Image (cartoon, rainbow, N blue to C red; front, top):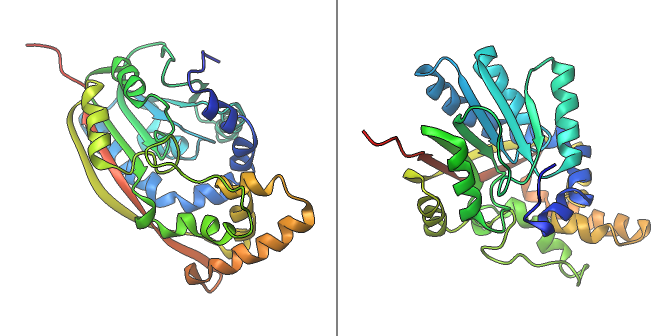
Length: 287
């Protein structure tokens, strides 16, 4: 594991948050299938002009999107997934071994990690790039790891007002959990890339060209039976509930699940994920 620049995020994702994502990885993968499909379509577009190459998945988590990309690109592309979370990388490696996929998973802080081997032809991320404490440094490091002319395709959340589902638990829990951490606009976290102009400046300042942010949205679903675990284990509410007694957690969980009523239809939870599609290109070599 390489030097960690972002100590707060390292502690978070190697602690309770990382464990919660591992425990709920099947639900999260199901929830974000449309996002993974979007990235695999972009990857296929790139692969049409390059039948072989190297791909890096940034903030790969437990490897769901990375493995989907491996299936889409076939054996001629070499894939690497990188994440700061040791428990999630361990889960990703087990999944790849079980699926017999030759995908490399690296536990690393992308801000500082020196990626070995040939440069990458394509760098992607499914909601994994909003957590850098120094995003310009991180994207400059990614540019150095990219081949001249390499493509970047990433998805990041737009703002909380456009993603009401993602703040249901916090809004419902606020009166019940007075110590609940509040989100800080622009700080590392889920909505850290909500500001379009800021993200464009980050990519441009870090040396990427042809920078484009396009609003996209996805219809996401998961089983109602998984809602209670999802809402009480993940995000700021999950961290706050971990400090409560079992009886307190059960009482608050009832209130949280009830608050999701507008998003429940039959036996499913349904919501729209409002994201940015970040697209850019590494500078080509001078003629």
